[in-house]
Amino acid sequence: MNSDKKTTRILEDVTVNVKMKISALWVASMFLFIYVDYFYLRVPGQIEEIIAGKMGPYPTTQASLLAAMTLMMIPSLMIFLSLALKAKWNRWTNIIVSIFKIVTLLVFVIGESWAFYIFATIVEVVLLLLIVWYAWKWPKQENVEVSP
Image (cartoon, rainbow, N blue to C red; front, side, top):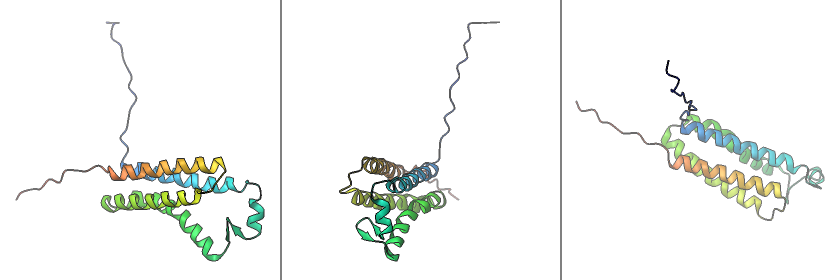
């Protein structure tokens, strides 16, 4: 028996499909989006604004609630679409929708003074930029033509 042999254990590193990575980033983005809204309810005066029928500087209307729901629905749908769409459509949908979400986040953070809101926006933008990155760098496969 040779006691000089050493066994090393290497952690298994499984390759994760790009669709799964992008879908997981949408999940993280959606949770941040929800938690920011949830924490914002604790900002002094916010509950009174809600009771008074205000959504920020705007009145709460059918249209404003529909717009808010549409913005919230985007990451929810993208979780599924990132897994279901074919690669070409998936890539461009994720790039376009992420850029749209980044722009809307940056518009909403203008004039914001609460640190949690600014911090969450930064993290969410980073997550969305990662989605753009993974979608842009989508792995290519060789197109092998079979001759008759």
